[in-house]
Length: 177
Image 1 (cartoon, rainbow, N blue to C red):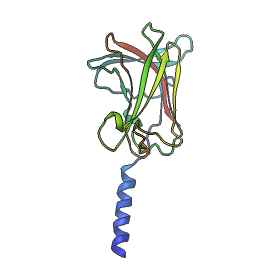
Image 2 (cartoon, rainbow, N blue to C red):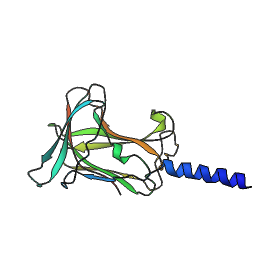
Image 3 (cartoon, rainbow, N blue to C red):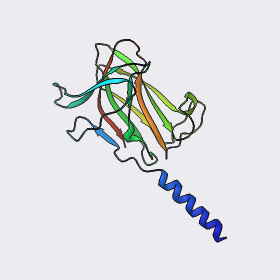
Image 4 (cartoon, rainbow, N blue to C red):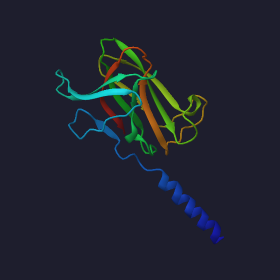
């Protein structure tokens, strides 16, 4: 009996130690707080710019795609999402286009990074600030209907399928709440 209790205790400790709450659930580029730049496999140019109409700053991303999907990876949002109800990204397209299709993809820690093993949502982002919001209440599911493990989010990306010219877009805020 004590052996079973000890094994259960050790397993519980390992599971709890593997899932850490997201350390920095907000990146508000307009706030003047220290900035964490996103990452992606494609060459990009990042700059903090000032919106002369609102007086607030934003992150401008010029993605020069070496591959098909220019975008950003948001590594500081990996971890335990179980205590949050909404993911919000405020963005706009910035390269003389009326709108562009952007995809938000969330992977958990199980399996390979394949289409059937991720949550994906498409947003149409225009030249005005667009609120891209995903409700986390009730969890997220893959196209195959499997629930995403909200305790172990290990990758989140925001990208467009534009394949030709550089894609220039702005991010005002990324937030889990």
